[in-house]
Image (cartoon, rainbow, N blue to C red; front, side):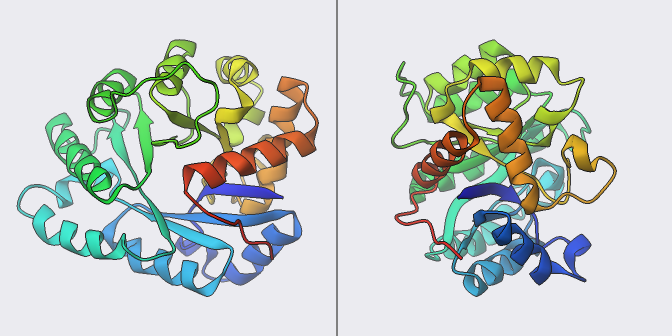
Length: 272
């Protein structure tokens, strides 16, 4: 049994065959899916999918690319809608949200405002968080560790505060996030030949702190480069991790499923 902890199957790229894609995933052993809604326009669709499939859950947030649409003049109304949706029993987290300095579609000030507003909401509702961080490790950590100052050297985190989506930092970044109670999301790039630093980090990361992600329809594994990514590709990502860590695929599947269960506070992961 595998869990895809980060996918966007509500994306328009799946409009023609969404049900078949979900079925194909379950046939591949991916029996639990966490749909990520990254803008207000996608929140209701994510909740509807979670309601339709017993093995699907949703996480709702506002990606930093939308920061210009969620400033101080918009946030009060948006937060009211978001707060209500986050109370839904199938909505298990806040996110994805965070900082993105790669594309810089919004200023650092706009992104920081939205970042902190969503952290406040997550803390208020006691929800785990799904963090987007691209070329912004230092600022992301500075803010996150203000909100989550508790630390632990334990490789096991029974009550994770959140996940760093599609982790791509240094070994020092790995240690910082683990120290503050975060899981690390591993995606298709772990299969890319040029992802040497990521592969080295995955080799050293505790398996107890890794969750599997596809980020479908984005970031397909090497075997499907140039194609639409799908949640059925999770076993390929798990296989790459198993090879790097010299572990059995079954062990990676089992432990990452336990990790996902702890991260999203899912009492019993549904099987299809």
